[in-house]
Length: 72
Figure 1 (spheres, one colour):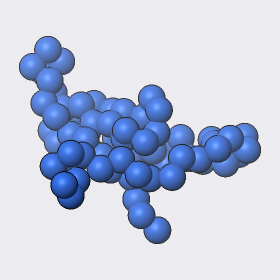
Figure 2 (spheres, helix red, strand yellow):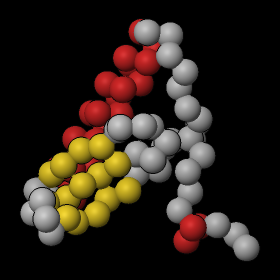
Figure 3 (cartoon, one colour):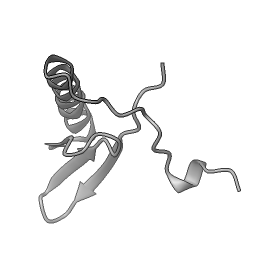
Figure 4 (spheres, helix red, strand yellow):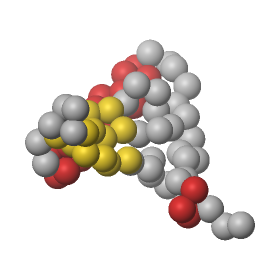
């Protein structure tokens, strides 16, 4: 199974790292380090998917790929 792409970036405004999962709406997290933010978003992703399953909501297929990985 393919897994979801995760974006990690530093936010000067927030003074820490923001992480999001583009294929899962509203799935993001914050951390003081990239590792902390990544661990938090993994927990958020698992909770999001578990909630969707329990509530019979559609689960999006992983398909997001940043432009840097696109083949021209």
